Length: 108
Image (cartoon, rainbow, N blue to C red; front, side):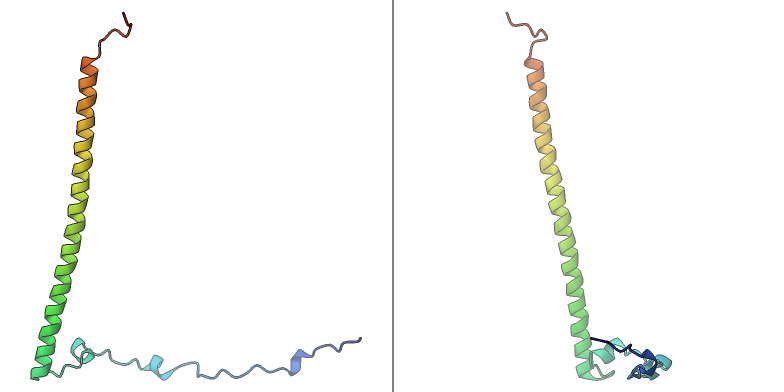
């Protein structure tokens, strides 16, 4: 079977569906403030309540993080103290065994 050579010169690339420079690249949008993100209207009672709730929630999250850090630190200190007490007991037992052992290793 004889094959015809493929002529690549007649093939055209497909056009890119989007413009290269987007309008948003040229004119970036202003970032909304924290109050605008949460739908808080400045000066309204509802907005003030939402801001107060949000502030209390953030403070509670900070307290929870601090308690987690302190509990991990306490667990580490407890572990180190337990290892230290165990090591001290082994050393005291070893020194008591060394003191009771005679200096002469020959058995009578």
